[in-house]
Amino acid sequence: MERRPWILLAPALVTIVMLVVVPMSFILVYSFYENIDLAVDRVAFQFSNWQALFLDNYYRIAIWKTLRLSVIVTVLAAVLGYIPAYFIAMTKFRQRWLLLLLLILPFWISFIIRTLSWIHILGNQGALNGLLQWLGVIDAPLQMMFTEATVIVGFLHVFLPYMILNVYVSLEGIDRNLEPAARTLGATPWQAFLEVTLPLSLPGLAAGCLLVFVLTGGSYVTPLILGGPSDYLFGNLIHDAVVSELNWPMGATLSFTLLVLLGAVVVAYSRLMGLNQLSKAFR
Amino acid sequence: MRAWGLIRLYTILVYVFMFAPIAVVLMLAFNNSQFGGFPIEGFSLRWFYKLAENEAIVRAFKTSLSLGLLTALVATTIGILASLALVRYEFRGKDLITTMLISPVLVPETVLAVGLLIFLRWLHMPRSFLLLLLGHSIIALPFVVLVVQARLVGIKKEYEEAARSLGASPFQTFLTITLPLLLPAVFAGALFAFTISFDNITATIFWRPTGMETVPTQIFGMLRNSVSPEINALGFVMIVITVGVPLLAGALARYFARKKT
Image (cartoon, rainbow over all chains, first blue to last red; front, side, top):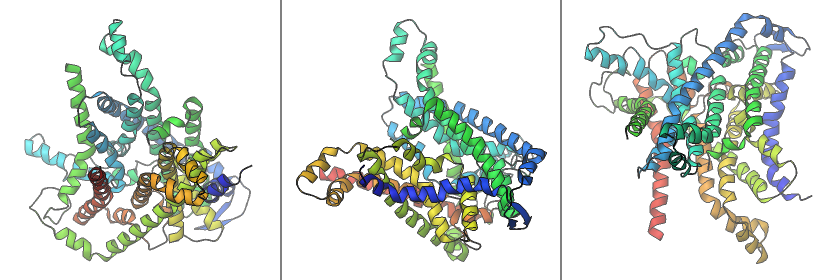
């Protein structure tokens, strides 16, 4: 066996094993530890954390809320994102590179700035209220901020480029002659799209949906900035347990649960589609 | 065609949705009002002066900058080595190793952060700058590997083999043949890593030592139901750094490439 590839891989592998693989297994062990006081815990093998997770309604509600919100954001992102991706892939517009560049640009712009920018749009002093008041549609500012809807808008704004990019990549790979061929065989433009282009673009759509779903399901910062007190996700419970309550064993239990829930989605996806589609967006 | 017109209009609206809020932040950074929002009361640079005088922000800025640069260095170095192994050699277990290397993107960042934090605490290693550096590096590593791998596949093995047959050592071959050809991907990967680190907040909130702030956590701490004008100005500066610098570098690279030919 050749040794050189292993020497080249060693730094990356050691880093990943020590900082990702081992800690991910360790949180399972830690979930059986016993929390005694703030930031104080004891080595143990007991099930109180898991019991709390399964019996306390609080956690079940959070799982439900997270699932619901992730589905809403994913579906909206697919609907909002598919058409622009189609336009970019099919347009004869000479400056297509500009549209693509603009699509990659948000990845370079600070997440927290993009998220808080919605306060300028939807807040009481925001652009939308200002516009509506100026038009005389409303007298007093509408209360739009800090609701589930603003959280959804914030997520969409940040994750939409992932969706568009993934759909674009798979539309771009489709043979341009297929749709005209379907047309000459008597299909209407809509039929040609539904029966030729759409099925061929599904891998990209699925990759985009997976990314948006998993990224939304694992978040906690967006609801803190744009949501009200009842807009929390499972990630917020982890944040509370670890940062505010300093209950590390519970934090580990919740983290492991989130890992399993979202991991199941990733595994199901990779069984169906393989993970290759995901890396295509980088080429 | 009418349908196509609708598609175009829809696309324009989606782009407006993506960029209008950002444009508003950029605009409000120059607003001469003591509040962070509308209405606009005239042009002023005073929030930028305020920003430069705010010690907490300047400190957070320096932390973020050094963290980003070091992350880029670490992630790019180990990422290039790993990509070379994955693209240039055949060995058993390659698929498993590829999956492991990109695993940090597959694991939810919150979980990654808590797992690493709890594990290091168990090892009696408190939160530190080093934890932030290592943590940011593993988050950036998958992106570096994907970018570098994609480029490496396009570089013909024959160039390296020719250098080797002319007597160059593997290391010389790498330095004089592979690396120069790989340079665009190295820069792209490093830029990616820098931006990921500079922008990170999800994991940073868990990993930062008490009292240490990066720019995103500093902004997060300053948010109290409203946005202060200083945050707008800071947003402007951050966008100029993470968007302006790469765009300028790309444009310059293109300009010089054209000049040569």
